Length: 628
Image (cartoon, rainbow, N blue to C red; front, side):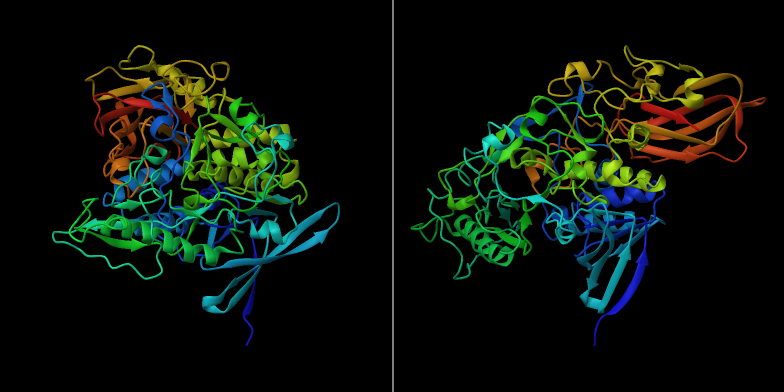
């Protein structure tokens, strides 16, 4: 019996529900597009899911490459990925990998414009030939229910990592490492090759009250101290090895085909990773039976990954290929939809088979950099876009853009661009050249708290800009007018945004210390109809914040509770003849961006936001107020 075929229609099909695909689908759906998210695994999150368990890192870096200073350099990504991180932080204090899966699932289920197809693999596309190969429909299969789907859409977005939809559509792509001459990159090889970054299988362990022996399978690798001298016996990537979680540097398979040879890579990675654990538990060769060189006798494996965390495979060739110089020079792009900042992080393709090579060589970037929409649109398939590690970038540039928080903001940018393009019947290959559409896309991203480098195309306007704005108090540089700047973070500090592309300042209203309640007030000369209010609060974006199973990394965060800078309790009030009337009241807030619809017929000449409590600090902070 053949699988039953189902005919589905949407405006935007997103293939792949990882760190890029989930924000992409959510952004498009929240912008009003009818979206289908097709994902081939039982849980969302990709390399960040419970199946792999890599923590999400991004522009704020780690270790020596940390990029963050309070009130000066706030590099952590905003928008949907910040919403996810804050939700996880508060609702998942126990740092459960499965709870993270659930939060992503809940967020997708909550969107009425989003249809989620789990355990469903996109296996082919139907092309309609005209000026170029135009995708008419995608074919997907769900073996567990013996169903097939023919999904028609205006725009197809490949967030699969490996680029299966784009490959099926015949989109041009790159693999391996380019030569220096090809793109003028000093960090590239003298001669190109086919090698890539390898993959990793992660493990977690727990300490017990009694000794926990470990008997390794007979097929695990045996490692000497020399084999692991630059890894287990060092501090690779500024992350000290630990027992409870590891090991990103247990990398292998970059000299193989990371798609076709993935089963072989998984088997060898199990041998590698469990061999490292055997080295930790039982010591290197010739260790005495009663020795415990790593103080690991009471530790036991709690979880073993069976899905390799893949770093690299196909990279599509878009309308623009991001290069080393684009990143190092922080080159401005008028069609920028996202930003990055992770170092150019190059690994030896041989991984642990190259014991004399550092597991990573990180080249710090001086500033945050733009990612243009043209690097997310296929050059040869007009209605194909992509987000994630498969965007259009050289191997050197990709070594920075590949990290998951960067993938997430690219996903939100692509989803937003696709939704607005679909609304106006603009083909993806024409987005960047449509000046007004690009202004609208960038404005929508800013409204949705996605940071873009440079001054806002259109600072906060509307009825808020027409008001006289005052506050009960302020700190130096933290005046009430800052909430209209269109800038919702400070990035003028060390390794933030290049000086010519930003301005100094706090970019937020800050009430006086030890003054709560505090108010910020908007007054007009004539009555205004106010339908909604949008607020952006401070969530300490100079700090790290992400689900991690590494205790040392988590210790750098404020985890398990709301961020102390964030406004917790507040009211939106309007002035009536008999005094202030509350039209919206919020308790126990921990999110950064909040939107509220006000009661129908809300008309006033004065409106204020009354902050009664924060989640820790002694004063109120608000980055932005939008009134519509």
